[in-house]
Length: 417
Image 1: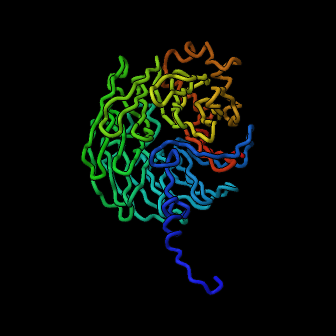
Image 2: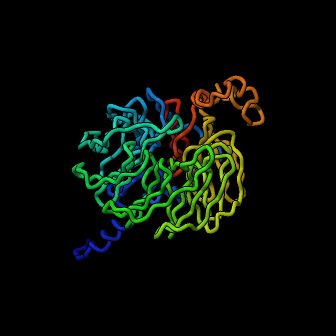
């Protein structure tokens, strides 16, 4: 300006490097490729109120992802929805041939997700126009608690994801052409976790795999296993920080491995409960839990337990961390806030389905009702299916400024403010 010439190229390069161009910044489940699920700042009220609610025609297990002014989420009604993040109004929807239990990944204006029909889709994020679709060898479910499909990760022009056909895939992000696929010994529904050089992903075969970006095996690690789950199945994604990768398994263990060579740093054993998903906060690991009805805070260096506050039911999603607080939902249809430093857990929002039906399962002391065992005659499959009447929250919460976005098994996407 003012007749002076200035070379803006270094500033432009710097901006791109730090991701200040929103249209180029990738967004993924748990916020990033490392799946740490941490954001440094938030302005979330102590008691956030419902800003808007959008109802789909199917249950929701996938999590919302916010990109620019759009919320993306897939439903079991087979539609991917793009909603205005401020109003909740629908911008577009795209119909697939299967349920969408995969959380989207976004990169360079393209949205990627999987359906239970065995396809990976690439759509234009602004319009919903299909760019391409890629066919795997087919999807399948491991058991009734296998709620999610793999959620893709995008880096350097390649889309990575796992499949029910036992493979980990790498697909060209522009063309949809296969780059490589890697065969494991089981269903792969965990989301891949990426570093600059490696792809980390677990399988229902009980192995945790570290792959090179060319699709060759760098190392693999076998979980210990447990009497009733001898494979030590790995259902959920890992988180990576510094030189360590963290993940949970159905053998009741949380594992911390050397990310370089797969050697063990430590193992934390949780009696009687699958361990779900780790998130990272400074020197702490925040781990959601299944049958222990708790959330766990561990020392990240040695795996020593710091606090383990109780919640009423299972949590199958990642805890989203903002500052010193973690936000998560459970099968009782309630959103909880955890103060990571003092271990206090408080409920901050309840779905309408939970208000209506929670008393059928949870008593006034926030414990499971004593008559459930007799009522369901130890049919745990039917019990978990009926839990969904509470608007169970399988979604990882997306934090955007002073708003929380999540989805529920009641078929709705919520925005709290």
